[in-house]
Length: 415
Length: 120
Image (tube, rainbow over all chains, first blue to last red; front, side):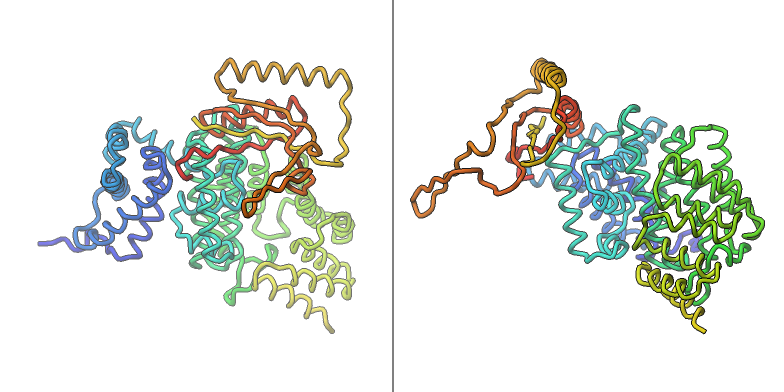
C-alpha cells in the first residue's frame, strides 16, 4: 500500500520554495568549484528544471539541496566537456566533495563557508550598493531578476543589466571569492550588514506578511541575518542585526489596519505583536549586553527590546530609550538618529521640547521628518502649520498607505 | 594573475593644501619604499609620471589624412598624472597596493583591470 500522506505535495510552488531556500547554497558551492558565477547560475537553474520535471512523480529526494548541487555540478561538467574545455575543470570538480554527500563536519563547514564567501563577494566595497543588494538577493536569496526588479521599483531590463554589469566587474577585476581576514572584517562586514538591513527595509512598508514582495524581502533578510549569525557567532553586530530585524518584524502584523492603512506605534494593538520573535530578539539583546561590545545594530535592537517590554506607549521606559539614543548618536551622529531621539525626548518632556529639537535638524524632503514635525505641531496646537507639514509629509511618503495616513491627518485638522 | 592599472589623476584648478618641503621629502621617501617593495615582490610591471596635459598632442587619421592637434584628447578637468601597472592575484591585493600608494602621494588612485583577451 502506498503511503500517500508521507509524500509532500510537490507542485511548482513547492519547488519554487525549495529553490529560494536551497539555490543560494548550491550556487555558492558551484562558484567555488568552477570559479564562474554564470556557469554556476546556469547549472543550478538547469538542475531545478530537472527537479521540476522529476520530483512530482519520483518524490522529494532525502536531501533536496544536495541533490540539486550534485545534479548541477554534473550538468556543468557535461556542458563544459561539450565545450571542450571541461577536462581540467572536471578534474577540479572531482576533487571537491559533492554537496549532500559530505559525511564529516569539515565538508559541511566548507559548504557553509561557500555562502559566506558568496555574500562577501556580492557585497564587495568595489561594487555599488545597488549592485550589492541585487547580487545578494539574486544569487544568495534565490529571487528571480523580475522579483528583485519589482522589490526595488525598477524595470526588469534595468535590473538585468545591473546584474550583468556587476558580474562582469567581478570577473574582469577579479573580485576574490573568499572570506576576509580578521583585520579586514570590520570594513568588509559593514556593507554585508547594510545590504541585509536595506533588504528588510525595502519590504517593511508593504502591509501584511503574506504580501509576495514585502513579505518575501523581509523573510529573506531575516533568513540571511540568521545565516550570518550562525556563520559568524563571534561578531556582536551580526547578532545585533538579527535581533533588530526580529524585534521590528514582531510588530509587522500590528503596523497596518485591515484596510491596509498605517497604525502608529502608540495606537498598535500590542497583543498582535509576535511573542516568539520578541522572545528570541530580546534573548539576543541580553547576550549582546553581556558581551559589552556595542555597535549601532545592537543599540537599535536594544531600543526595540525596550518597546517590546511595554504593554502600552505610556508604560514605555522612555528614559532608557533616550539613553540608548544618546549612545547611538555617539557612534552614528546622523540627523535621522537625532530625529528619533527627539521623538523619545518628547515622550518625557512634552511636544514643545521635542519640536525645538526637531526644528534644528536639516532633513528637508525626508518623509519621517515632515511627519514627525507635523505631529508635534498638531500637539502644540499650531494647526495651520501642522496641516501644511502633513501635506509636505504626504508628498514625500514612499507608499500609498503612508500617503493616505498623512493626508487623513491633514484633513482631520480642517475645521 | 591579473594586471591592473593604478592611475593617479589631477584636477585642473583644484586648490590643494601645498605640501611643505618636509612632507614632500617624506612622500618621496615613502613612494621609493613602495616601489622597491613592488619590484622585490614581482608585482611591478611598469610605472611612469607624465608631464602636464598642456604638453600633449593628439593625432587623428580620417580618410587617410593625418590631423595633428595641440592639447589633451579630452576637454576635461581631470588628467592622468601618472600610473603604475602591477600584477596581482586579485582585486583585493591590487587595492591593498593602491591604498598604500594613495597614502604616500596624498591623492586618490583609480584601480582598473587590464583586458586579458578572454572577452571579459
